[in-house]
Picture 1 (cartoon, one colour):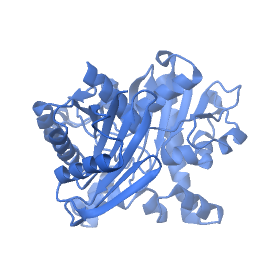
Picture 2 (tube, helix red, strand yellow):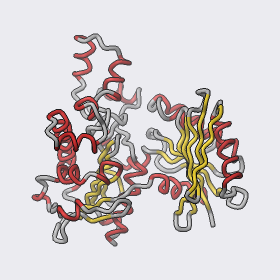
Picture 3 (tube, one colour):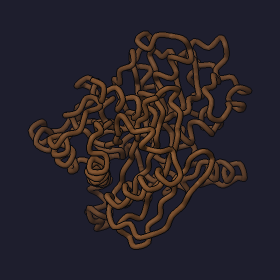
Picture 4 (cartoon, rainbow, N blue to C red):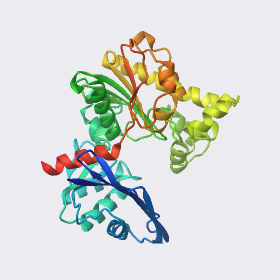
Length: 397
């Protein structure tokens, strides 16, 4: 039974899953964190048990050694279940990577070069890749890029109306993110409905602390809300989403904010937390129901933006066959789903209130009426399984 090891690395941590491809079953998972920060921590989970360890983890290589030791001590045995591939999540593939790619030294160089476009993500992923290639030297390693799924967008969708020479010099265009999730969910929705993916026009809302929407035609991304960075688009937990860029110039001139302060403001102190002091939708919903004006406004702004993108993508696609909600908020907030679709009856969207409230956690659930022209679904995402699928396929090519 082939297994794939999936690795999601950051600058000071990495998560992993060992996935059996027959049945796509998770055999083990874990987390190694606080790498290079003195007292590190690792936790290995398998067969319903958890095995935590605290010790110094000086670098990613030491972290992978700790992971391998955990597999040896607690199972499943990597000697008996050797990975046929190691799949690595890489946030930014720029315009160079259109699909999952087997990693060699040249691919490493390109990922490093693209770090200028994702300075918070690609360097950490590269550290994990290098450590993993040393730890599993005889196994194909595959980079699965968050941006790759959106490389099918037409030029009209990915081009900004910016001076062309400047944009080309600095590689400024819409790239889009959450691609592995959008791909997984759109394919899962088609399978659930028993309809060919190639025939469906879909809108997918990935609503977590980070949030994005995608318009998907025949399994191909044709538009998405995140842009040059994951800041653009929907209102998020701590990020503004769409904002008039002149506001930044105004704050720089009038408030004296530096580039670093603006970056911190837009990415860490805005969105829901900026509007209402919290980024957990459950807390905000409870506060709004209790009469909290700031929480009510934050939710209204959040759902206003969702409806705006739903309308835009209905226009871009010429209507939709399926609208899916996924990730933490999308899967668990009936109120947000209802508010996001309010007013879309003209487009054939008919939500079933009882189904929406009763959507089962962890299962694909239809929440539209049987007569609704648009099927509305709650689809649990599984980015790790999608990475494993793509890594397995690329390693066999």
